[in-house]
Length: 264
Image: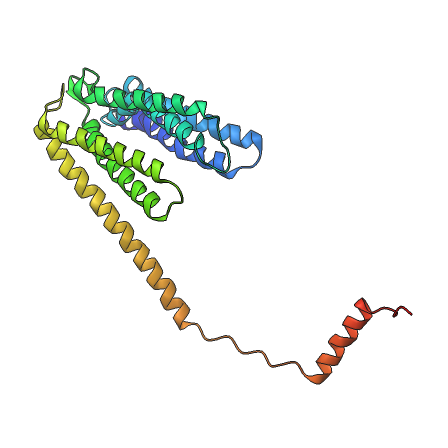
């Protein structure tokens, strides 16, 4: 089997199984199909993580290598956010308040883990070099996180109801992440220097800005098409008022259903 076929079998096929399994899990109502979707997604994720050993000569394994490094801290971050979000002031699916401390601890451990992948000896390296996808992921993650936290904090302050505390927490997280960006731009990491981080940070900013502009244009175009389509529609014909014969027919039906003998 040639290298291209091996990469398709041991890397790209597992990659395709992940969204397929998630789609089956979310769209199916039967428990058997949902379990099948979970198994497919888990099998695909396992195949991607194992790709550095199954197809070590393929250049695509850098993505699987990075996914393997990100599973641990990402799981802690997501679990922490879930526990913090659903142990607070929510209407449905509320968790005990004691879970909030556990969620905060999990989030902090996951974030410190991510930070250690830049400043400590935890940087994802492949064949003696820093994983090129990590150079793209890390500045993009920090920049996107601070933007999302700032936007969420502003939204809670403007349209939220009694969400001042949550808004302040998000402002603090946004400021903390922004301070990490400034530190990474000025202080070299264990394997990535400040100049390289700044270079990829500007690229990440351009990518996010382009994505935001493209999304805004898509929304405007969609809204414009809907507006033009509605304007092109003819007004529906007006309904003529009921005739006396129709009034008599309605009165007969009403009297037959709700009428009764008068009490003496």
